[in-house]
Image 1 (tube, rainbow, N blue to C red):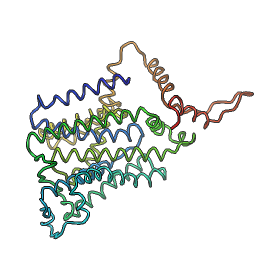
Image 2 (image 1 turned 60 degrees about the vertical axis):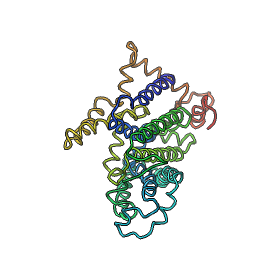
Image 3 (image 1 turned 45 degrees about the vertical axis):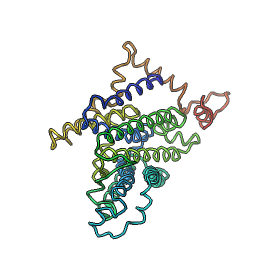
Image 4 (image 1 turned 180 degrees about the horizontal axis):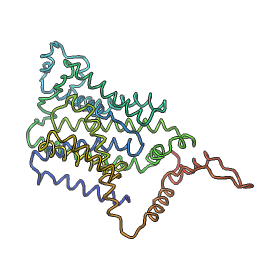
Length: 390
């Protein structure tokens, strides 16, 4: 998709979102706001899975950490200077020291972004540095979910246990539950999503984005030509975790609750399905996947609560078998002008990639008498291209 087409699609998409409050009921608008909050996480997950080839099954942890940081601030505001109710019920007599800084909204928002990024940095450092990838990394990320959920459930006096944190009062003077407050939170979510999408589209169009795709497709070759894949993988993984934390902030403002159940194994797997159903390596697809899957879950879980997990699994199987590019990728293929054969399309794609992307050369037979150019030097030249040095 051309840059112009991406901007046109972005504008059209957000015009619809801005107009949604005029034709949706308060309940439906609240649901859409929640799905848009999920979309921020889906974009971050698409960055690491779709573009960098890192399948994380533990993004529920980063989502939960961001949500809990914001919820702690909201709970302190609702307590009006006294001890939060769940602490009193658990026998805690004094506010824990680590809760004190969350009285300040700026500190809470900052930690909601930095704490998930810090956890992602630690996990990424020990896994990527030791070249752990593929299914092994996915298993480790899911183990992180189990640890986090166990910790949050067990420390009921400090985290609210299985009930989580809820019963919030206000945020920056806005009272929870009022229609005007819900409308403000909805538009804030739309604005944040627009900013995140624009920044990520720009990021993936830069040299960094092309190197990430090269790492996904041929990590050893990228390492061979002098780049350290660990640095790029850790960077994008931390960015993705930060976006998950941001999604958690928006979710708490929209829903007014966060609990360990919303950061467990099942939600973490559902997050991956958003990207798979919408379309990998497509930021628009991630948004579409989060909205479509969320809407389908709401619709079918109300009508067929016991059958919903089976329906979700069936959706995933259908997409994998018949729409491997996801909903957005399939729509793109259907909108291609007729008369263009697959070979011509492949040639055009290769030409475009050669002109503006990264082409990692394969070894070629040497010709007697010709100057010798090492693959490393050739790869370095190809990576530089028209974009200059990194």
